[in-house]
Image (cartoon, rainbow, N blue to C red; front, side, top):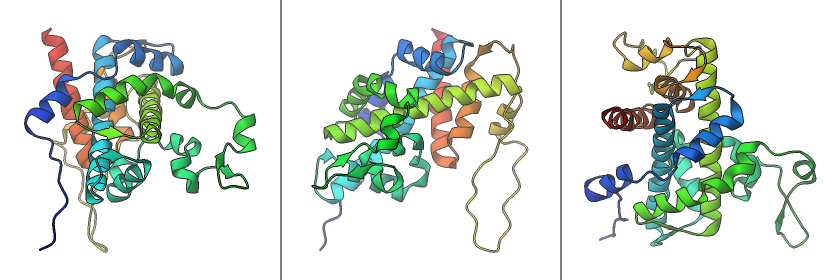
Length: 259
């Protein structure tokens, strides 16, 4: 009888620990928003942005853990990240980081020296990298805290990729939230529906709660909670991860209001 690889479910005490741990502190989140916009960011928007980023990285780590378990490994390596993305396209976020990481060398401009060692390409060395990439180191403590909360271990290269993806994702989220404020709502609202070849895609439901985020209410100077939620619908195109991120973010926002 063939042994089945271990499966990691988000339930019980582990889920509670993930939800209770705030790996990305408000000052860090605010700093990322300041990198992309001069707008004021509300406290609830900061909490929601941190929650969405945590949810995304948690799902990536979960997928990587399953890949590692199939090879009877406990320590995560960059190859597990690639496997997680290959198996779940919803996890393909923060793609700007791919251009700067050796893990994604097939998609980047990195080159190898005569001994096969990865070195920065001349083009990238001459150009100024985006602030999301330059500032990725700020996410290391939060990534390590998130890994510990899930009982996961990772090699330094994997930590590097997780912090890079987290930095780029949160930067993109902040940029889209600012766009939502400027444009008065989500102008590129959409969703992904899986259908059989030849079958028409189902029409969007008028009761879909995500549609409520397509029209903005509020002043044009402050990024609020709903602006970040709307930006989440832009950044996360898959239904499952997007809905999980929105649900957990709303719970965080409610806790903030109650406090």
